[in-house]
Amino acid sequence: MRTTSLLIASLLSFSPFLFGMGDEPHDAHTDAPSVDVSSHMYKGTGKIKSIAEDHRSLRIFHDPIPELKWPAMNMRFEVADHDLTYPLEVGDTVRFEFIRKEGKDIITKIFK
Ligand SMILES: [Cu+2]
Image (cartoon, rainbow, N blue to C red; front, side, top):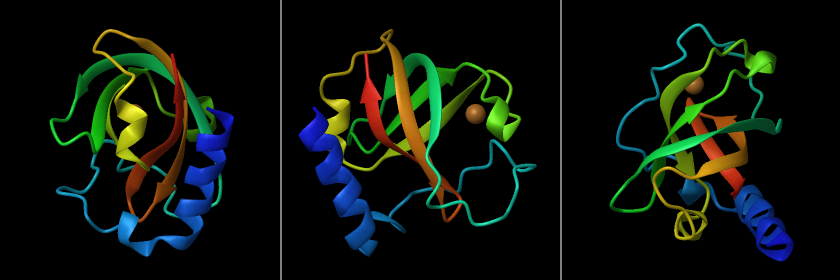
């Protein structure tokens, strides 16, 4: 798992095609700071509500994330690598790390 995470981190740095393929803008946090925090990794915990059929995104009911002033809420996250989603099932309690990039919240690591 650690090796996979490192690999994903590397891919994120070098793969512009990973971004810009989303189907909808993330509108859940319109009051979030608009500064570029793309290199910053945020941590969250929550419960898997659904997994997209194409395995490119998840819906998570996440606990509050004080660093972003986010209350607990149900929201969609993209994933940096669809392989991240395969061990997951709806109902799993998870902890995860994500980055914010071009209006998207992208999970880079997730553990249950
Ligand atoms: Cu949220």
